[in-house]
Image (cartoon, rainbow, N blue to C red; front, side, top):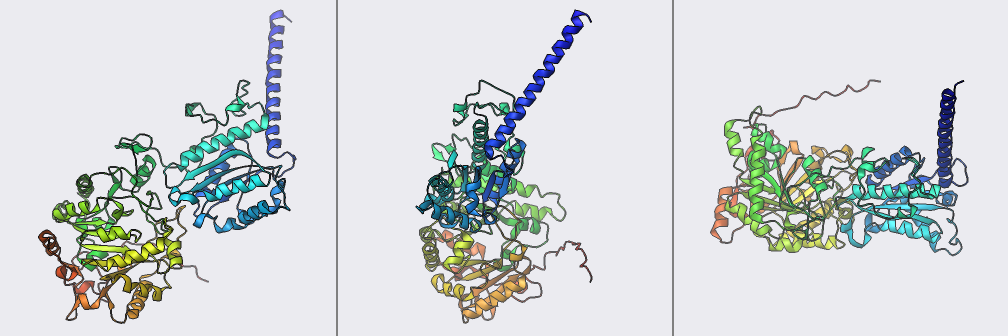
Length: 639
């Protein structure tokens, strides 16, 4: 054998030996990691608990599980209701993704575990060494809008676990579902968790997933890697696994650290991206506009919404807008699935009302122009649609929160655009100071304190008092007022007596009763199609409620397509056997312009026969062409 060939073979053997040693070394380190997660060496795997009511924490826990598994870390995901708390002492490592529910407490499925931790931590007989062999970390999911109870459950779990001797390996992470940054917070916390697990496993802090690095500084793990290049991160990115959050789109609003001109921005880039994905056009830093499906429908001559049937609104000339995307409630039936911000007072940068009106009309008309060429849209209807005559200030959020709401309403009226404003009954002082609008709504989502809390999930602790005061504030209004009831089967359809008792507080001109609209499943709502009442259910409820009023209110109109019924005050709006629920809009604008006092009877107009309750048309305007979709249902199985 020649010297050169022998040297080559020796070099090859050396290379193979080095490779073998490296693989062996790496396998030892992986085994060491697994033993660190479970020092007993048995088959019991670490636990990842999700404490979730609406599904957000559960979804985040599954995202984390995927990342852990992708990094050779095997965990069992656990629902607390299926776990025996006394078995915690057997665990070497547990992780919690915990949401805070009503009054700062945990969701029902985690109450037993929470109570056990609390009682054990305070029981001197248990001692502070019970969980001394257990390590843990907690990420909290909550809303800062709830003040002191923000992430109370996560903090309490951390406190109780430490009191029982467990070692916290990473500070509690705190995600804000309404702050628009929960994905980033969770990603950052999860990356820090992975680093801590690796350092804890091998001591030297070598990165198991990007090769052996003897220069890694284990002490730097707890520091924030603000200057790190995400492209150099070898840990699997949570955003690439599951439950991907909204992308951070750029915005035309110049922001610095979440602020505009030194003030907090209501619509963060994440919130903006989410709302724009749903079809909203964002105006400035806190307003929005969206084209309604009924606007499109009447443009095509296929019928208008229930407001057309009840009040004579021209749906194709109606603009849906709001000067405040924020709200003080987190209702279970929210159409937006809580992608809009929340708050108890105005704390954001404020845009000029004239700019809001101009932008809303501009964006609305641009959306109308996109209907050109759509089958059924005539040039006449398109031109009418390009000149909105009505504004529904009910798009999303709480428009009455906007400090310049009166100026904005004045500007709309100056352009002879009528206004329907909806408030969620949490700002009675704002209702009292509101200038005349064409029709003022108060949402009456429930009739008792307990059911209102369950349905609206209000931010205010004194929500019931605010609700009652808001109803009373309606009684002083001279223009048209409405109680708006949204029926949710299984939630608020059994309280007819309680609803009737509320009539005397606000003495509304009208009561709209509508079945809830199912908008699909989400992490923030447990509603299903089972919660949606039939139109016959709404009719039965409405008739019973009218009967309770002993003639003060009667069923006046219905719109079968919207599953909606209207009660009207008999002595005001029924004249010589004829209903007058429609509005003389030109008369209204003349009254506003006069500056003189006026009331709801001064601008009422007769209701057409096709819109009256019980008519064969069911509230469908016969001038329009009814269009029915052809539905193909699977045949029912035969026995």
